[in-house]
Image 1 (cartoon, rainbow, N blue to C red):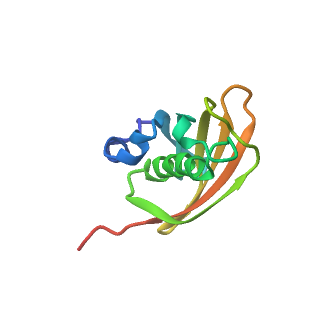
Image 2 (image 1 turned 90 degrees about the vertical axis):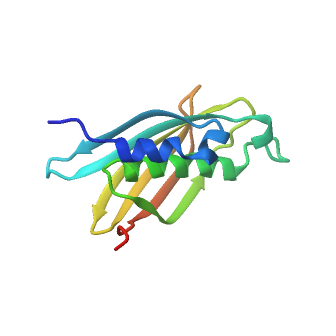
Image 3 (image 1 turned 90 degrees about the horizontal axis):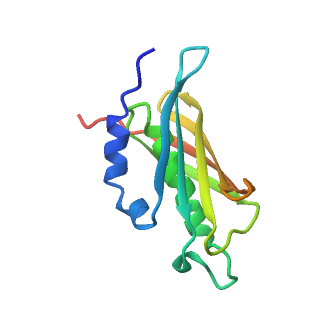
Length: 146
């Protein structure tokens, strides 16, 4: 099997100033081929919770956890070379994270159908692998301009 061409998604990531400003690091990016021959994207990222990410309850603001998951979602659903954006997303917060916690987000494209897809992202604390949040994104491939 030949290695997937990740040029499109790597270019997208290099131009993602929002993720860079938050210190989100790309750890892994790949395409999985299923038994049925479908190509599905996968990605893994990491972010450290900084003092500007902590809310008035002394826990990581949910918006930052969401952004980490959303950025990882974008990597996974663009990994197969299709220009893809979010159609909708939701997140369930399971445990708080705190100042200094390192969060790791793992995204796996579950299914694609036509121009749509579903990608799941799990956000864990690196120290104990505890699940902080579960995110599900529904993607839509953008048609190239005519």
